[in-house]
Every structure is written in structure tokens, then in C-alpha cells.
Length: 437
Image 1 (cartoon, rainbow, N blue to C red):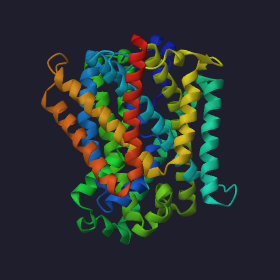
Image 2 (cartoon, helix red, strand yellow):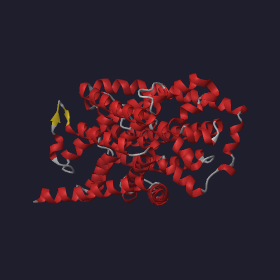
Image 3 (tube, rainbow, N blue to C red):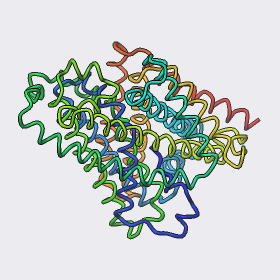
Image 4 (cartoon, one colour):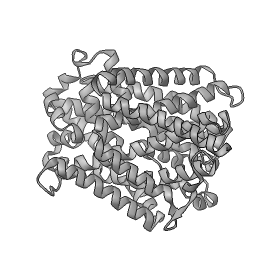
């Protein structure tokens, strides 16, 4: 999820970002719509071992966050990941292909958020009486509304994001507190026993499919030039935000698996967090978590639409995408409309697992490369070689494991991410060749 506060350059030029604000950027980026969208999917893959699956993903995220912190200190730039990749490889076909993959990965994330919104919304209000129709109507409507808001005023988007971060954290922390108390006399706690865990390979795969729930910590890199006392606060911002979210997700997973039978979790896979609130608070709890999910996914879509359009604009300025993408439509980058259109296409065409697989695979590949950059430049950026090496190895193994395992159970998701990667590099090669001529 892209945080709008990082994108408003006029504001950043006037104000410095404190440690607390930097941590909130990382937490806000991670705790977006992802956890609401992928929790049920994680349980379906890992069963009683779901907390361990989230831990696996969190460890890889924390290793990668170390590389990001060192690179952010060495190359503070609002371009973030794009800057790191261009700094390491120059403006080549390879760097262009990876940066284009970053843009498309954000489009995939938008599709994930929109799918989550479409899954939760019909539980509050049915439009047609047909769940499938309502799903597509809601997800299409929310993308259209968010696009209109982005065209109307970026200040409105920023305000929505600021309030949404506070609301969703309050609700999730209340869910955790009440949920842990509710586990004391809940017979479903037995589902967390090791006997109900899937194999280590499936636990790892489960963690990697839902890795998208962690991807937002890299947004701290975009704010790095404006963080006060950067040498001390940038590493702290990455560490504190990542590990806070790791523990939050693990406890949410424990509460969910310990609150509902597996068959009920399977039935409500797309909105399982709301269903998990029922044993504690009944229909009121279900409604509150549903509202939190709608607020979170709506704010994530709002922010990511603008951020995605800015990524395409910056790539076009760096001659890694056609220069036409620097054009403006109604005083906004043309990439905003293109990003929204691609999101509508993906969200209405693919199932949640395929979207999540494609998004996780895309970010695992990008993070593997960022870890490799930190490993290769360890002396320059004053990093311990071991940590980025382990991060690169972990991301690479996770990427390959995810592709192999999902090939047997979710061939569509594998085909989507494979096609996206190939197209990103092929189009970049053609673009660079045409540009030279």
C-alpha cells in the first residue's frame, strides 16, 4: 500500500518526519487491506499452523527491512525502491523491467484490495441478492469512486488515509484483546495444536502466498530524505514497524483459528476476520470488523491509485516507460487512469488466490533483488553481509517454492505472474531498442 503522505512533496519539503511518524508510515503501509483479504486464504493453506506461516513471512520481511534501512541511509531518495535499483544497475533493460514489475505489482495489490472490498461489502448490504454479482458491482464501484476522488483532490485522499490508519488499528487491537480473552473457554483452541499443522512446505507456501500483507514497509524508503536523525531513526522505523505488524498478524491468526471451526473458516474464507468476531461480540462484532475492512480497503485503494500513477510517471521521466506517460489528464498523470483501468480488469477477471499469488511473487522477486543490491554494496552502505545474503536467499527460495507449489494447485496465479514478468522485460527491451533507433 502506498502512503499518500510520502507522495506530497510540497508537504515533505516543509516538514520533517519524526520516528513516530516514520513508524506509522511503515505500519500504515502494511496494515492496509491485505490482512482482511488474505487471512482466510492463509488458514486454508496452513490450517492450525497459520501463525507459523505469518511468522515465516515476517522473518523474510524483517531481513529485507534491514537491507532497505541500509540502502535508505546510503541513498535517501523519494524514489525509494526505484532509486535503489537504478543506482545498482543503471537505466538498463534489467532495471527498467524490474521497475515496471514494481508498478504492475502495485496494480495487483490494488486488485487484491478491491476484491477484499467486494467480498466484505455484500455482508452489510446486498444489491442484487446474488453474491457474485454484488462482489463485482462493489469492487468496480469502489475503484471508480476512488479514481474520481483522486481526480478531485489529493488532499481528500490524504485525509482519508490519515483517519483510516487510526480507525483500523484501534479496531484490530480491540479485536486482538477481546479475541484472546474469548479463547479461554473456546473449544476450537485445539485447532492450533501441532497435529493440525500442515507440512513445513505448505506452511512456507502459506506464508509466501500471503506475503503481500507485509509489503508496505518499503514505503519508509520514500520518506527517508525527511526523517529526523536518520542514522538512528531509519533503522528503528523499519524494525519497530515490521515486528509490531508481525506480532499483530500472528495474534490475529491465533484468535481466528482458535475462534472458528475450520469448516466455518472455509465457508467465509473471503471475509473470515469479520466471522471470527462473532463468537466474542455476535452480529455487532461481525458488523464492526466488516466496517473496518471496508474503511481499510477503501483507504488502501485511494492511496495506492495515486501512488501507482506516480510510479508510472517517475518511470516515464526516467525513460523506463514511454514518455507519453508523463502526460496529464484533468491535471493528473495519465497513469492514474491506466492504473485504474488495469485494476478493474484484473480484479474482475481473477480469483483472490491468483491475485494474492501474483502479488506476493512479484514483491518477493523485487525484494530478492533489493537484498542482492545490499549484499553486493555491503561495504559502501556499511551493512553486515550476512543479513542481506540471508534476505536474498530467503526471498529467492520463497519465490521458487511459491511458484512450484502453486503450479499444482493454482496454475492461473502462476501463469499471471510469469506472464507479467515476461511482458515487463519484453516491453522494456522493445522500448529501449526503439528509443535507441
